[in-house]
Image (tube, rainbow, N blue to C red; front, side):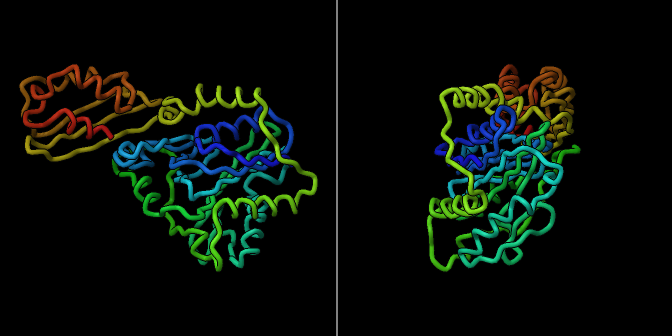
Length: 326
């Protein structure tokens, strides 16, 4: 077993690393990493319907799509993440217990009684502290999970508090659960780095043949290329989900405005604007201009900037109209 202690807190890099090890290596790996504040969404999720767009934008929180399914999770410096990237066997997929048992055993050493529950969660006293997901690629297999150690739970809630009423789609929805931190149950406080060492010790105890792996310059080039061409891109993180309908409305001093969008591959295919607002010019001009534009703030903002918004929405600002698209 090759052990990887990632020194990077870049979520793009760490998620790309998992794919690199999955697709370009043949050996078994176990990795631990800590990401700076970020939202990691499942492969089959609609990013915009999972996040609090305004909060994420204000706090400049990266949104990164991973290879595996399941729900959205919030990563931070108080959250330890683990990955098994191994040669596949017939009893790996959906066998979450096989990969979470080392975590449970490590916690027992801290006098914490954790257990598997449901499909893919770990809990302490009925409260979730770990979510897990899996992905299979040919003869290779990825299992990864989160471990809430000392996360700011309110930040988790604020970041993932999306208004799903705006969306009609078939994406995988995240399920809200009562969550907790491991530190709340420690008899003696330890740091997240010390906790990381305890996890490594458990993995080493289970895998006598092991060594810590250091990435070569060639490895790093491959990973960074994957970051640039995939994991940092709008197409992967936001545009990947194939089709959804978006709707939003708000009452302004200038009247009620309702927005309806049909979006496919992240591109607006059709838009309709309704309301009891007053307008000098026909909003059909704006609807036509939005066609084939990405459902992305910068693109829509650039499109709206081409119009004198006051001619279309009396007593309503451009920023107020822009806000309705998310």
